[in-house]
Image (cartoon, rainbow, N blue to C red; front, side, top):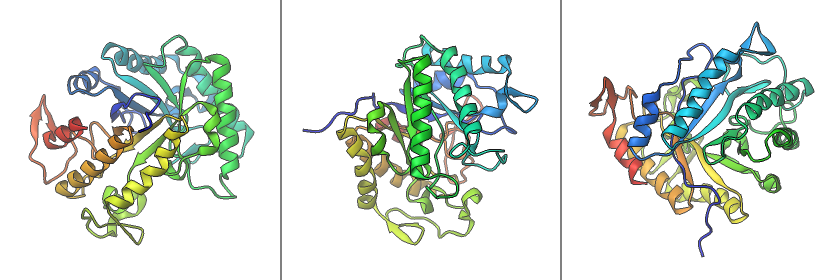
Length: 331
C-alpha cells in the first residue's frame, strides 16, 4: 500500500520580496489573490533577519517592520493559503554572500542564542494561529557538512535546540527543516523530532542553474532533457526518481516531506524547462510530495521571468508564462 504523507500536498510559490536586504520590497495582496485564484494553497516566505533589526543590534527589533510580515500571515488566512515563514538569512548563516555574518550559527553559542531569540519573537507573535495556516521553516539550505563550518552533529544540535526553544513558547507550531547539502540530503536522524523536512527541486544543476553566476554556471553546457549535465554526470528521469526515493523513505517513517523550492533559471530553454518540470512534478506527485516554485515573480517564476523564448500573456501589466502556469496546475 502506498504510504500517505502526513502533511497536505501543498502547492504554490516562494514570495521572494524580502530574502535579500538590499532589494527588499513590500509584499502585495494581489499575489495571494492570484495564487489562490489559480488553485494553489501555499507560499514560502524567505526572509532576511537584518531587515527587522535596528542599528545593527541583533536584539533590537523594529516593530513596524514586523507588521509587514503580519500582513503576509493575515493574507494567507484570508485566501486560504498556508504561509511558511523561512529565515533565508539567519543570525550566523546564509547561503548567499550579501553579508558576511560575524559569527557561525553551527559553531558559536552567541549565534544560536540570537537565532533562537528571533524565532522566539515570531513564536510569541503568532501563537494561537493554527499550524494549518502557518509554519516556521527554520533556516534555508544548510550547507554540505565539513569539519570547519558545520558537521552533521553541529546541525543536529542546533536544530534540536531551536525546536525545543520554539516549542516551549508554542508547542503546537508546525516546524519545517531543510535538508542539508543545500536542501538535497534528508535527515533521518531527526525523525524523532516531529518536524517536516523540506527538499529541493533543483537537480540536475546544469539544467536548473544554467548561466547562474552565483553558482558559477556561466560556462556550463546548454542543457537538454533528458541528458542534462550535473557536475560531470548526466541525469535522466530515472536518476531523478532515485533521488526522491530517498526522500520518500522519510514519508514511510511517518515524517512529512515538502519540496520548498523548485524551478529553473531564465536562461534554460523554455521547452527544456517544461519537459524537465513535468517529470519532476510527476515524480513528486507519485510520492505525495507538494512543491513551491522559486519564484512567483522573477527569473524562475511564472510572472515577469524575462525569458526570451516565451510567448507571454499580459496579466494586469505583468508578463504571464501561461504554459508554465498550466503545467503547475496539472499537478
